[in-house]
Amino acid sequence: QVQLVESGGGLVQPGGSLRLSCAASGFRFAFADMAWYRQAPGKQRELVASITYRGNSNLEDSVKGRYTIARDNTKNTVYLLMNSLKPEDTAIYSCNTLNPTLPWGAGTQVTVSS
Image (cartoon, rainbow, N blue to C red; front, side):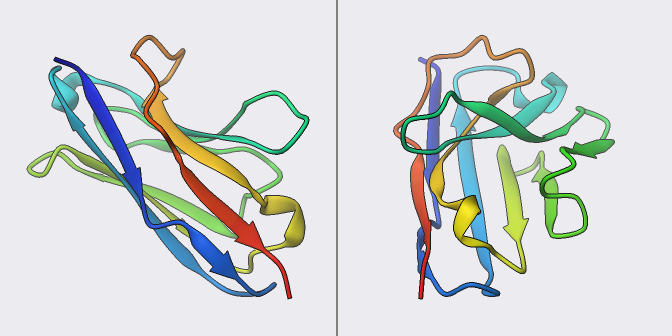
């Protein structure tokens, strides 16, 4: 059974940092290109960052220089390290394959506010 479980979100002040984790199971994670997405209130879900199964990463312009995506194939986990957070980063963050094909997890809420 495919499962994606995100964690690590929370309330943080502008300029703060968070590390999100996504634990995957039920599919061949080591051979999957993975990605982080976010959905802000009233907006469509958008791609934030992706990482190929080989470890090559790509970041959207809005987070470039502030976010880092990483993966640990021994733990079937993909991470999103977020620095210099801004109020506009507030959203529910979810992981999935690039060109998402798996059932979505619950996501993890990130709120950036003073």
